[in-house]
Length: 318
Image (cartoon, rainbow, N blue to C red; front, side, top):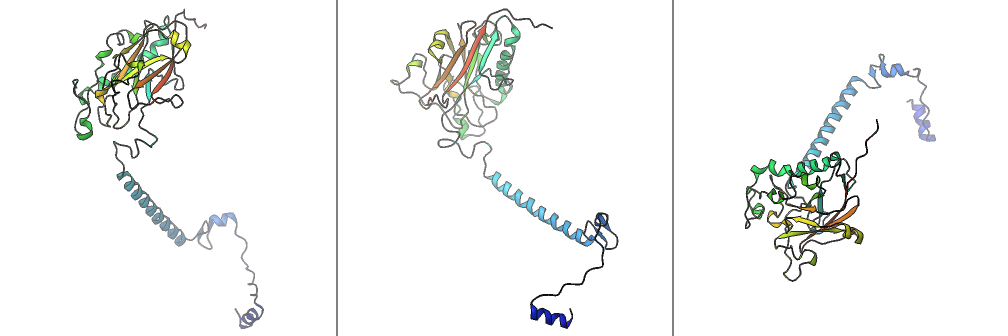
């Protein structure tokens, strides 16, 4: 800048405009590659090297920071026990009740419906129960036989202890694969189980406070099961219900511990005289002193519907 221009700038506070360039506007083709300036996409080779090296270092440090945070987080977790469980958590301390057969093809349906005169209508239920029970034989080598005085208490203290093997022979009379779990004869068997809660075990009722619904069948150390019609009409139609075993779910298979080979204890309910061609809504509840029942949230209970039809199948027209 000339001396006169500097003086003008100092006096007026305004810098004189730079002389106009003679260069013509850059075209898109020149932006991609400008031979005169030696640029590609507006950058020289040196500029490209600098920016590539910068981002390589930047993302390498970012990835290292992310991996370090992930490693620290994973070291705080126990692969066998959730970080938060028990009272005051979303898992809670009250086990839910589940049932089988539940068809994955109809995940939103709780209806067990089939026709006695059409084997294809109950084949899926039989296969579902068969598949569910097959897991008890598949890992038999990872379990141990437990007598009446044994339990899974050792699993909490000894990580090398084997869980008790669940005995399926209790279902041989009336609810076995030989009779297709009662579906063929119109006396369907339904599996009842509890959700797995870490460290949960049933608490016995005092001798004078056993609920009337299960008083005759209740056995200390077990979880009694009682199924009835959900409404007065359903209670009239449900007919005779047989429990296997009669005392319900055996408590010696508790507490649940996340370990290889653990077998979840179950019970079966057989609807021995359920009427034909009538829908029956069933409510099954589990009973132990530390199991609460709440209809709104379905705590300690499960609902499903059973409909056994007995009519000639309708032939599909081609």
